[in-house]
Image (cartoon, rainbow, N blue to C red; front, side, top):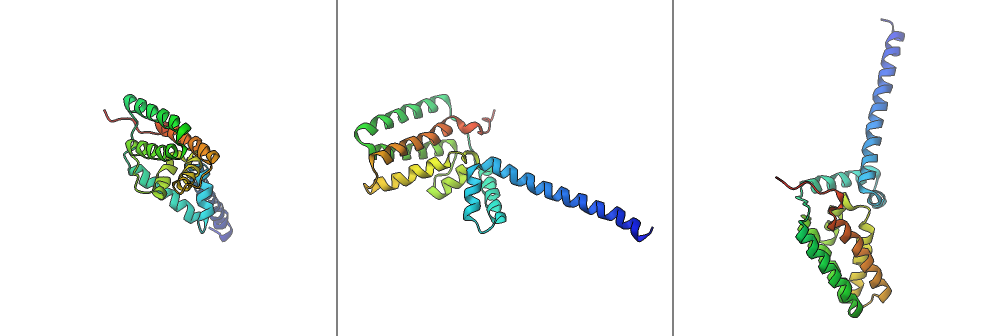
Length: 184
């Protein structure tokens, strides 16, 4: 075979392989973007480079996949709904206490769903896999809750925190559409 013929065979094969590899990377990136939503962009902004950010997100996904995330029974869901109503009612007379109680209720709900609750930063990383769309709410609420423990949050900030906590609470309560089916 001549050199020209070999090149005519090898060059298209190399081009096809390169296109396949590029397509795989694009598909992986797109899956991460879809899975993590706004959290993908946030992680990218905080990382040194795209590869480090995507590696971090894949690690979050691996950790999350090892968790025993479970749906709630109807009775537990009803109990949480009643508790949330009590926290909202508490807001009228004691808004700082209500925000603190909302934070504790969301944390308890995470724990009952199977999420570890060992610290806010880890909670964010674990929740980001299935709840990336609502994490901005949780961050905002937590920031106000931190202000309120020092009595530095305004009533409007406290009201906003309740709305933010409610967004994550509702998603966790409804299982966020991603819980694994209960074992038979």
